[in-house]
Amino acid sequence: MAERVVVVGAINTDFVISASRLPAPGETVVGGGLQTFGGGKGANAAVAAARVGARVSLIGAVGADDSGKRALDELSRDKVDTSGVAVLDDEPTGAALIVVDANGENQIALGPGANGAVSAEHVRTALSTLLPTTDVVLVSTEIPLAAVRAAIETTTEARVQCVLNPAPVIARLVDVLPLRPILTPNEIELGDLARAFSGAVAPAGEDKILNQLHRVGEQTQSPVIVTLGGDGCAVRLANGEVERIPARGANSVVDTTGAGDTFNGVFAARLAAGDAIMIAIKTAVVAASISVSAVGARPGMPNAAAIAGVFRE
Ligand code: RIB
Image 1 (cartoon, helix red, strand yellow):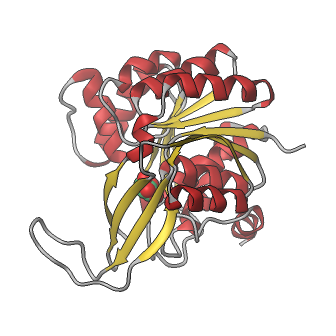
Image 2 (cartoon, protein in one colour):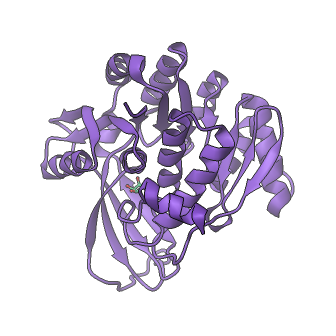
């Protein structure tokens, strides 16, 4: 039987408009037609993991509305088990308003809705039935800190491997890092974590990222992987070694939305399958590079065969 990944995180509907450039504050930019996609960092990562063959269960919440029903239907079509998703009467399903520019860069405004009501109790209850048959738990932070903490604590107590995608770095997130999850921030989130640990962070450019990687990794004593968009990623292992992994597999950059989620989902799936951490990272970097070739967070997410094709090139 395939390895199981449990994802704890947000489920959204993404409303996307592609435009030549992102609007400045107060400015209106006219773009193309509105497109609607399944989104949310948790749900996206769950889909990415399922596409590469993991058994995936998602824990989170949607509203008892049409968007919530559509979100659950889409996840089921991607073979994600949604029995751990609460359907809440009093909250709307989360929604993200996204503008994508001609370079594939985006701007996102998020209305959390039901994601903001995911409780620690719900997470603990849902996890307790899944953990005995789970290899990796992936947690992201578009849900309340109490729910994030419950996910990491319950997973760590059960001695199951935990990956924390600190996206975004919510208030007091550093309080849960002594539990030593593997961390997967992007460059901005790495800076936020480094500052949360120790105030101002010195040099610019490459040195800055290295400096921040060491600062965060020394505090957490766990692997820290910073995703760097078109530059791939850099990893600081728990023993202090640092390695750079270049991006590989991107033919055209249409929309970078969800590239980080793809990285996280595939990384968790490959760790669950027993890959060594560096192998899992290299596979996840290729998956993320492929994912940016289509509009929307999920349409470009590859299956295992597409990733293998890049490694054969
Ligand atoms: O990471 C991309 C996701 O961030 C989008 O799908 C959007 O819903 C926001 O959560």
